Image 1 (cartoon, helix red, strand yellow):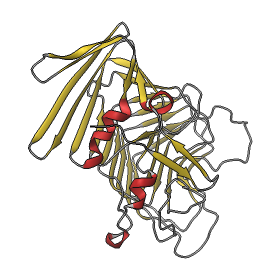
Image 2: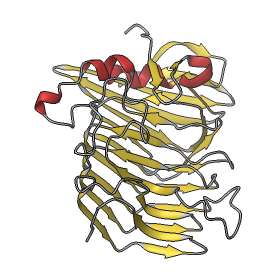
Image 3: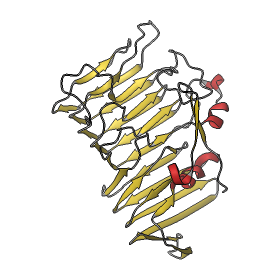
Image 4: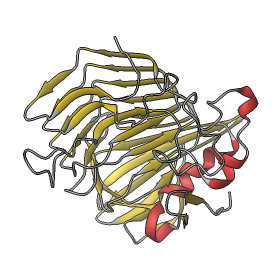
Length: 312
């Protein structure tokens, strides 16, 4: 599989970012394990990557070493994620380590990232979002005649502990897709003025058994600047999500079917909602369910939808 150029245009600022290995695509660790399994049709590719003291080796499904010893901590995570670009399913498992993450990483459909032993920390190294499920070339190919959820979907993130290292709190910017599950994750120590997950014109989203804690770095007590929901649920409006070059933006491109359950929000600005400035009758999100969540600590707000959304 050859490297391909990934461009992401910000329509608000009229700038285009080209993702590179050194700036965006790598992950690093001194000690840890990563395995991946990529399946497409009758073809299966499995690798196990083991870091020890800053070097890593790769092994196949039979435990045989593949290639040379890599005398560096950096691994091309974007190259791995891009395996799913042409279809198939990709499952990535992390074990026993603290991984320095950069991003943005372009995550494609049918991808699962998980830490089965719940002993993995992702330490954020850049003050930017980590994952996005669109890019300029992909968005150009969206087939909106089949509906508004034409982008990369069936994406799962499970069991990761995210340490924001006092940088901005953004993890995922997701638009125009179906099937997103965020489960058993912890997100802590981040800046207040960003959304951790931005759900834009998505269908069938689940956030469950997660902890969002101490995401108020830079916050001034008593400030009225509260438009910073941890979980932002919104329609596809250019001003809100300017990263989808060929989106058919509009209020009717709303989220449909978002369930947030058994999550804890502690010391955040606003836990769940949106801050739309439009009160149009067609500006609302559909089938939003929030259940068994805890709101602890000094939260400035729990649930706040400023559009016409109702929830149960």
